[in-house]
Each structure stands twice: as C-alpha cells, then as structure tokens.
Image (cartoon, rainbow over all chains, first blue to last red; front, side, top):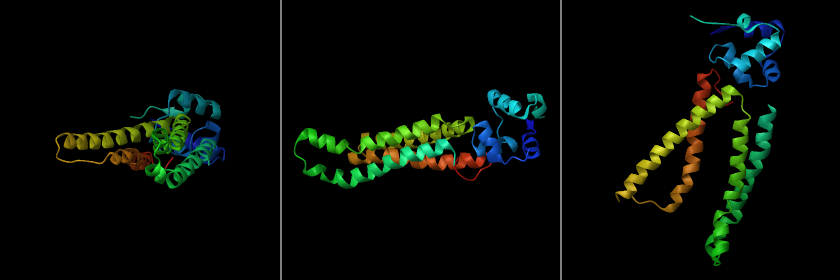
Length: 64
Length: 134
C-alpha cells in the first residue's frame, strides 16, 4: 500500500514523535507506516484520516 | 519516553530490585531453615517480586500499539518455540537416561525465554525499519 503520511506530516511541521503522540502510537509505528513497512489497521487508518481531515482513500492507495 | 514506557519502568524496576534483594538476603538462608513451611516460603520468596515483574510486562504488552503487539507476538512465539524445543530435547535425553540434570536447571527456563525474546524482538524491530527496541 502506498501512503502520503510523511508528506502530510511534514506539511504540518510535525516530527514523527509529534504524530505518534497525536495518534497514541509509538514513533516506530509512525516510521514503519511512512516507510511502507507496515500497513495500519482500519481503525488506525481512520484515526490518521481524521487527524489530517482527509478521506482514507486520499491518504492510502492500493499498491501494485 | 512514552507514558506506558515510564509506567513499565516504574513497575518493573522496583520488582527486579526486590528480586535481587530477596536473592541476596533470603535465598542463601534456605538451607539453614529447618521448619518445612518456612523453608518452602523462603525457597519460593523470589517468586513474589518475579510475579510483579511479570505483571508489569503483561501490562506493557497490553498497552502496546498494534505494531508493537504484532512484534511482541512474533518475538514471544520465537522464544516459546526455541526454548520449548530445547526443553523438550533435554527432557527426552533425561528420560532416556543419557543426561541427568539438577532440578535447579528449571530456574534457567525464564531467563532463556527472556534472552531469546530480547534477540527476537531486536530482529523483528529491524524488520520494521528500526534498529532499536520499541
């Protein structure tokens, strides 16, 4: 899965730790999502979408 | 440091300190205790702080986020399989009377589990892009 979490985070000037705090997850989890090494669960994907005020499909796209 | 990590250290470190104190102060005196009930109590005294440490670990795992839980599951599965298989192999060798072990060997099962879990957690952590522990 491709995601735009890193771009959205840096646009807002947040560090990975800032985003992790807002999502109540570890910084490692944020890093793993951003680098595409881990695909978040649906509840966490919704949480991310709500935080950035975007739809899930805007942030996450199916990979090939 | 995250709140759940702070809580874990707050609960785990005193438990381990108590364990060390018990092992240094009470356990060496087990042989000199003659009353059976007291002997059993003294021999099992280290279990109380260990139970608190185990409870702290369980609370840490429960409070983990979804990726951390996945990593804990993977690391614990590897630890249980590796140590379990080693115990079974030693058990079969002892049953066949090829090897014999002192009962104190059982006290190495938990440290072995913790050691293999630590290595497995480190490897799992690297898989998700971080060289350190969660």
